[in-house]
Image (cartoon, rainbow, N blue to C red):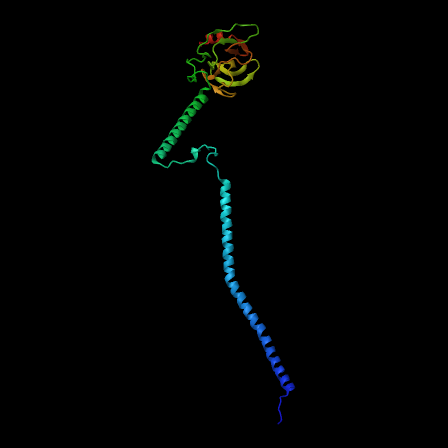
Length: 276
């Protein structure tokens, strides 16, 4: 009896070849599947993780912002017991009730009326000063002295004459400061000064009385009271200024000089002679 047997070499080689090819196919397929599976897993994880991560970050940022605000507020907090009382500035408030509005209107009306009254008083005082110059008296100084003759007295009244002395060319009428001084006749102002040589504040007027040339000089007036300037035409009895003691004077008085055709004459005698 013939015992049969397989050819181990051939069978084994074929089997090995087949097994080798199958293994190669498995090795090729397995990495591909692994790669695809890994990518799917990573994508799934990213899909779930990214929104959660963003939400966590948003909550964290918001929490930090609230903490910062709370910290800022805490830094500006002032304890009531330590706060210094601040004075209220009521000028910053406005009236909101009818009573407050009416009170405000009444106050504004009163202020306006007071301002208008003050303006009227100032206007009246300015008009009086411009027409009659300033005065130490409460009553306005008259513009024209009483009388109707060509020659007037320079003062409405006086106390007494000053004592004459050598070289004194005028007549002194002793009278209180601020007494009005008037022109003795019609004429033209030829000198008007606040600082005359020895005369102090003075005014000089040139006259022509019945064809006679006369000049009259009024000295020692009060500063700022001259009512006329050089070139002004004046009338008999017109206000020139006020009595004072400026220049070389002892006590308040009017120093009056009268010159007729170039010659000094006694002022009082000349006034009496010409009917003043």
